[in-house]
Length: 86
Image 1 (cartoon, rainbow, N blue to C red):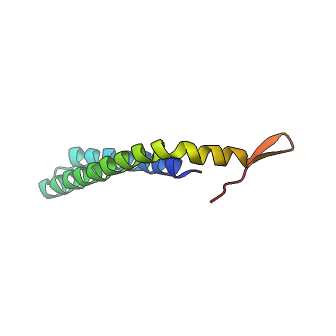
Image 2 (image 1 turned 45 degrees about the horizontal axis):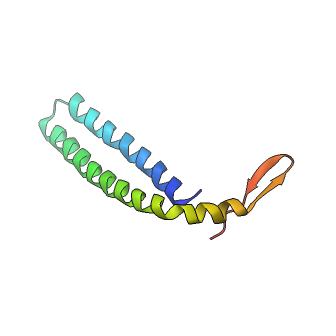
Image 3 (image 1 turned 90 degrees about the vertical axis):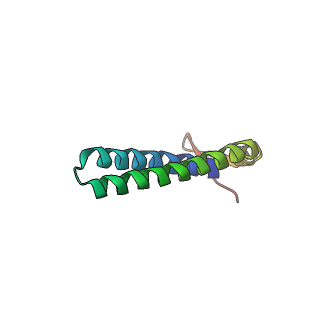
């Protein structure tokens, strides 16, 4: 898995967490908890924005990694075997 793929997976997880936090804030009657969940959702959104920015940079750089990555592909029993080279 490339760095870009790992960042995309992390972003998906963070977006899910943010949605959960927003749902918790809507569902609770406790104002203190509501405020806490909303604050955590905002903080999570900030992290997401930072990672999205980093992902853009990675995607501009990654074609060179993809070329190197694809050259290390071999086949065994009809299935491609990908060997990541660092």
